[in-house]
Image 1: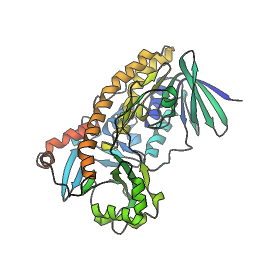
Image 2: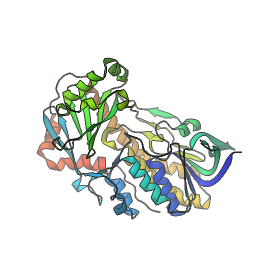
Image 3: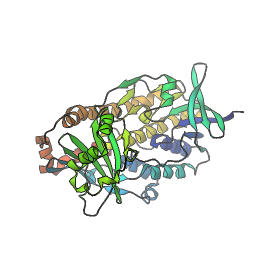
Image 4: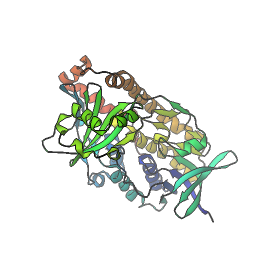
Length: 402
């Protein structure tokens, strides 16, 4: 027997977009089922930058103080080591939000917090270890989802299905939504190394001859991202782990006593970078949000921020139509119309940086020199507010209206 569940909204994917949308709709009184294919949220190297705009959402929901009790680091300034010079790049102390910093928090703490808040509302239901396999269609409209669980297959009948299942979305694939691929010249290798009190402070990144290395302060360890040319991972592995360790030391020599913590390639996680967006985010009975609608480059760490903003916009628009049973494609089109500009504008900025800065660095063997626009950041602190606003708040920030 297939278990059947009836709900107003079925959200596939328990990431930031899906969990935030589930919380907001349940808070409004809607019935929501969220499907998460994993047994928990404990996975390394997922995005964990909680931007000021997301913290503002927490403030509007009245849960900010509780949220900030979770383990996190507050980062107010970001800079980069370019060649031999350090450049201050972003100052969040003047952003137009209550919290004037980025909170670095492991994503499992963030998601577990949203689940705890959502569970306060009777209309919310989270089903873990439920992997969506297909869509249910009736009379030309998506009417729900089929999913596999350890206890058998379940069928969720829903007035609206939301694909929030990331850049490898099964939902957008099954719906046949067209993807526009913008390309990316790089991939990222994630790893962790222990931290010492004598280490340099927080930086946005280290740029050397042909290398880009990001180091995120996790108090007890560094979460690191080593940027490589697209498709270069196989050659890197063939050259051997000692060669890769030397590459790290060339850009961060102070790690000499710790690169041996990388015992084998299992200690390194490959992120295949994709930048794309759906031409149309929806079809009757279904809409995609977050990475399922627009996979972002890791530049600026803004993917989570945009996913949360999608969820807030979707909740603002969908809550009442779901309550009355009158959710239509016109409501879904409003969501795409609302979120398409900030998404695609941000992607254009990312693609420009990828093609004109990152590609050139990765293809050069010369030590980089400081370009004149970056010299202005050193000389005029006021300029550091611009990237802080773009990264921390973004274009067209959303606010809770339900």
